[in-house]
Every structure is written in structure tokens, then in C-alpha cells.
Amino acid sequence: MIDYRRSPGQRRNTGEIRVKGGIEAVVFDYGKVISLPPEDSVARDIAALAGLPVKTMEDLALRFRPDYDRGLVSASGYYETLLRHGGVRVDAAVLERMGAMDIAGWSRINGETVRLMERIKAGGTMLGILSNMPWDFLAMARENMPVFRLPDAGIFSCETGTVKPEEAIYRSLISALDCRPGEIIFFDDIRVNVDAALSLGINAFVWQDPLTAEEILKQHVVF
Image 1 (cartoon, rainbow, N blue to C red):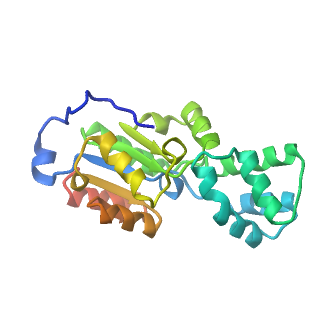
Image 2 (cartoon, rainbow, N blue to C red):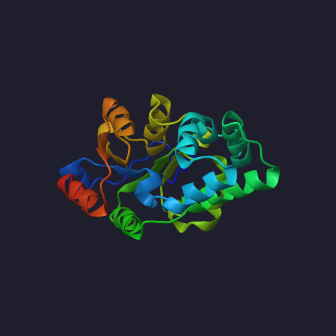
């Protein structure tokens, strides 16, 4: 979603933050950055429903997740494809249950990250989310998760049809924020996604935890 909170071409008022640090926007990935990782029991329970080993399910998920994140299939369609390639067929109710378990597993929020986001926004720096995210989760999140109402710009793969680390999704972010790449700080937990952002001139960092991110932001005079 490109969510403009300013008129086209309008930039944040010049002030101490911009003069000293040059940072206009701070952007967060969602999974394992804004959210906590799913509990181990989620993968075990989904694999048990499928009657497959957890490792097999994880390998299949890696193979077929991109189309789900691009918005090309629903949660049920994603799991149906995944299981078919694993030699398993289940009824529609089981597929729906798997999708619901997947969504619930990614719904646990890291409160410390959210508080950091709130501080950034309160200080006048633009806030963004850039995430590989399927339609099923995004619809739920927009309705039920207040953190999704914080950003000035939210770029989600199911809406752009592109996924990290593809260049196009970062270009969508830069356009939505109306910033130069060097005016953006981006946090992501996956190295390849960080490297793709760095290649475009974005100040990108592998996510460690909220305290480490706060120190990075202080170094860039966001606080």
C-alpha cells in the first residue's frame, strides 16, 4: 500500500534532525522485526496436520512462498500447492485451518519495536513498513493491528506484485516516501534484503533488536 500522508512533492519541514543527520524516513520489515517469530509449535502443528516432517514442510514453504507473498494465491491455495508437491491431499477445511494457524503465528507483536516506531513518528521523522506479505495476513493486520496504522507509507508485496529482494519493491518504497535513498534507514532481518537495499543507496541494517536499532538511529541523529 502506498499511503501518502502529504501532498505530492511536499517534504518534511527542515529542522535539526534533517540538518544534522539527513534522515527523512525510517522503515521496518514486519516479520521478526515488528513481529516476534512464530513459536516452534506452529510449524509442528501445521506439519502434523499435513502428515509430513517439519523439515519437509519448511523446504516446500521456501519453494512456494514467493507466489503467496506476491498475492497470486490465497492461504488455502498456497497450502494446497505445497502439500500437493509433498504428495499429500487434504480437504478444504484443513487447508483453511493451516492458513489460519500460519497467520496467527505471525501475529505476535514485539512491543519494544512498536514503541521505537512511535518515538520515531512523534519526533517528526517519517515511518514506513516494507514487507513481503500475503493478502490474507495484510487484510487481518489492517483490521486488527494498530501498528499498521502508524506508517506514513506501507509497501506490501501482495499489492506491488514484487517481493524483496527484487529492486522494484524498493523503488516503490522510495517513491512512496518521496525521499532520496540516502535519506532512508531500513531494518530487515534477512541479509539478502539488506544487501539489495544497500545497492540502491538506502542506509540498510540487519535487524538485531530494538536496542541496537535505537543506537543506530542515534548515530544518524534521528533521536
